[in-house]
Amino acid sequence: MTWWCSATGQPWTWAWKAYPGVWLFVALLAVMYARGIRRAAEPRPSDALFYFAGLLTVWLALDWPIGPLGTGYLISFHTVSYILLSLVAPPLLLVGIPSEMMLRAARSPRAGPLLRILARPLIALALFNAILIGTHIPDVVDGLMRSQLGAFAIDLAWFLGGIVLWWAIMAPPPVCRLTRPMKMGYLFAATLPPILPAAFLTFADYPLYAVYELAPRALDLPAHSDQQIAGLTMKIIGDLPLWFAFGVIFFRWARESGGSNPVHPSVAQRSATGSGV
Image 1 (tube, one colour):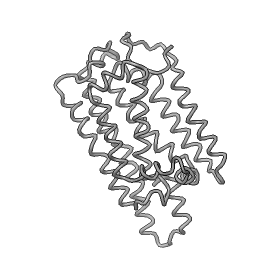
Image 2 (image 1 turned 120 degrees about the vertical axis):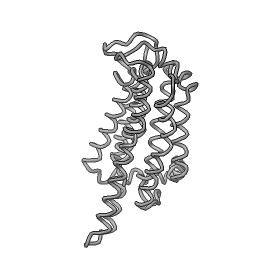
Image 3 (image 1 turned 90 degrees about the vertical axis):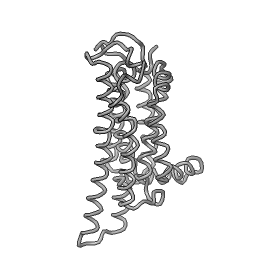
Image 4 (image 1 turned 180 degrees about the horizontal axis):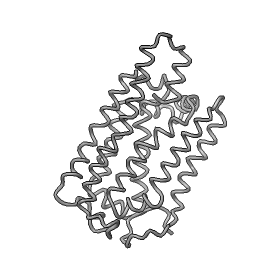
């Protein structure tokens, strides 16, 4: 049974195909949230909406048609999955988690020490970019994308790496100790390492990945052109969520710094923890 998208070598068809593993993964995230939100004192209606939007993004990235197109046919769709799983879904999910749930997890004896370590910006950046670079090495992609377990490992690495990347600036205080200017610097720094794989994809003279070069052509897109689109997508589209968050932080910081009325500490903390910025 095909439970997860992988490179099959079969000609592409627009006929819908079920991937139960994707549904179970999304359902697991939903159940974990439902169990945690019941213990929250004052969950906001918007929390569930943001979390649902994050779940929807995960589902779109992994299920038909983006999932199978990205795992076995077009590296441009592979890049779309990376952006959705690493840069779009994680901040939506984290915004949807009430701050008290985050603090409870960060103070727990099991997960707490790890969560506090991952909130350190240098560690978060190093881990995320190691995943980014490692999962775009040709031997790694060609070796893993042909099996369901290997494709799942790459998808999961992107998702967890994205959680780590955004956790460093969206964790509630005192777990996150960064000021807003420091958060903006962190986001700017996060836009720099993807330049390397994006440049290789865009400017390489030949296809870098055998799994996509030898795959049956989909959408009548040549392998080399597909790879160039992937490189441009990674850098141009992939930077947008980071710059959007940068802008949100900047304008909130400017508003609070230039406002005539001081912000009550409880309001400021709720803004920082509830919105993640």
